[in-house]
Length: 199
Image 1 (tube, rainbow, N blue to C red):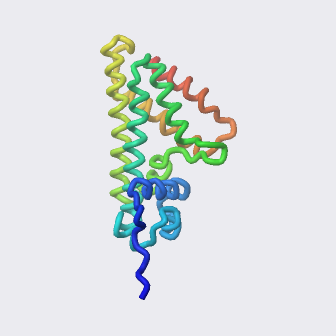
Image 2: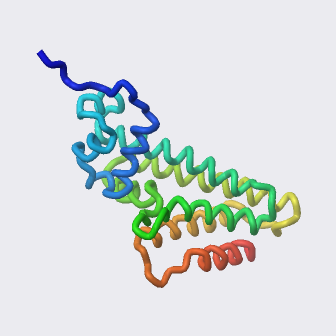
């Protein structure tokens, strides 16, 4: 009697979540099927459920893993020890390199571009999205306060500046997802940073 295929022996939770993320990133939460997730991860449905729970749990876990890794990389650029202007420009360029990997793969940010839709009808995903936005705001507030303490930025409300800086990040994600033909990301980044620094 043949045994049902279970979890692969070389099962790697991080790799499986990354594979699932790619599918969710491309098709969105609602538009992704369990068959597509199974094919991407190399795990059958029972194995997926055993490892990660239902589809929503897999989505939330894949988004959380991406967020923590991505925000860590962005934070390293934002606090690289250069001028505030250079750190901001490098921060956005690092995000852009994640949003656009090549001419055919410009999916923006998986969290901003998929969770915003799912948040409209799911409270848990809405909470996850709000938490991710809060983390970004907090990161910017910390950097702007540092710049103020060092006399590089005039006194002002760092929270408002942080929300403006975060809005630039979100716009970058959406515009790259839309593949606007006339959109020039690097020009947008430089102009946005100049506006932020004007306070």
